[in-house]
Image (cartoon, rainbow, N blue to C red; front, side, top):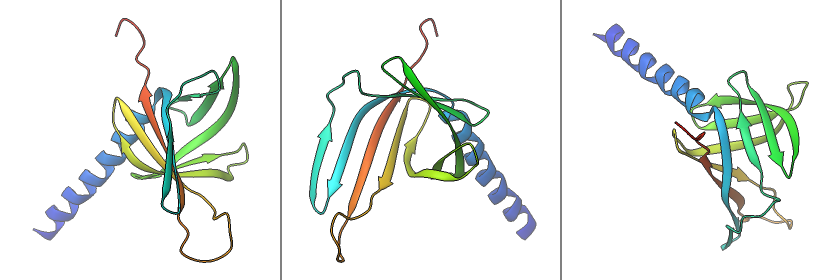
Length: 137
């Protein structure tokens, strides 16, 4: 009975991770960005040419596209709720908590450093994305 329970738990865990890896692959459009700073929040949902598209490839390559230019990096799902961007040497450069990820939408949260010295400061950014579905699908 215990071995069966353990097997079921492992199966559920690994299925969840592979589902996240499958869901993240594709082209994502930034819909809005919310910033929270010590009790105050601001949401920017005004789309312009400065907003990026993120093209996650199955091989772990990430292309960030903006205004006809692109930046290549790598990404890695560290767990079901943790996404890390790395440079060419594999060093982590940005880390995000995955709040939601499914076939149509993604929500990422990034904690930020306090502006001032002292305790009890809470700063983070939440980015909302929608998957760009190629026409004809």
